[in-house]
Amino acid sequence: MTAQSCYFTTGSSLRLHYLRWGSEQGIPVLLLHGLRAYAQTWESLVEALGDGYCCYALDQRGRGLSDWAPSTSYRTESYVSDLEDLVAHLGLQRFVLVGHSLGGTNALEYARLNPGRLQALIIEDIGPGSSISGDGAARIRREMSQTPLLFPDWESARSFWRQSRPGLSEQGLASRLAHSMKETDNGIVWRHDQQGIAQARLSITPTDLWPAVRALDCPTLFIRGARSDFLPAATLAAIKSANPLAQTAQIADASHYVHDDQGEMFNRVVLHYLQGLPTQQLQKIGE
Image (cartoon, one colour):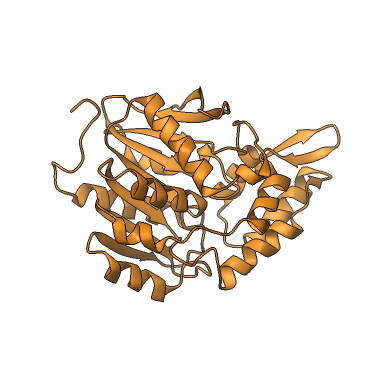
């Protein structure tokens, strides 16, 4: 399935990039990547969903082909505002929203602030407290403070990813090299605003997600990697207890980056969940 590359301008005058796949008559699905990822990270899931869905993947501000912004704006409120602007640009009324990590935070907050807009919500490996404390939060802060801004060659870049993401599949590694990095006269650099994103992550207080979990008003699936250091199993159980609309799934031999580590199983779980919803729950554009 071929992606169409598109742009729109937000209310704050940022030019943001997104990809669109599938017929505009399909069930609309909007996809939000993680902290340092990009729209193409969802290519495998889009292929698995197939022709019945119309998928949109956003390069969130500071990432991919989207404009960079002041580091102080790399915060939940700004990301959600960008998402609201994209939804308005696309003319979507009700849709499925999928988010990983940072994208999951933004998806949950969008749901809280825009009740009645989602047909379903799928959150990959993040929950209340994930970004605040625990081994995963500490790892992210460590990575943010230690990640180089420049690599001398592609082999050095590949070694960086192999060391920091030992469970990353070959497909996931190839995707990250192709879409999160680029070659310049000085060496290999990040496509995203690594310095600004790091400053924001190390200085801005993470959003409390419990209010969003309690306010969920649509069928929601939380997916955890069984080896995740970011979303504890106890938090997953607490989420399920906090709202009857929340369901949970755990995928074996996957870290925080479930769709990278176990892409085929992740896709299967997402597709099975959506296919299991009542027929009237998922509507195509215009219905």
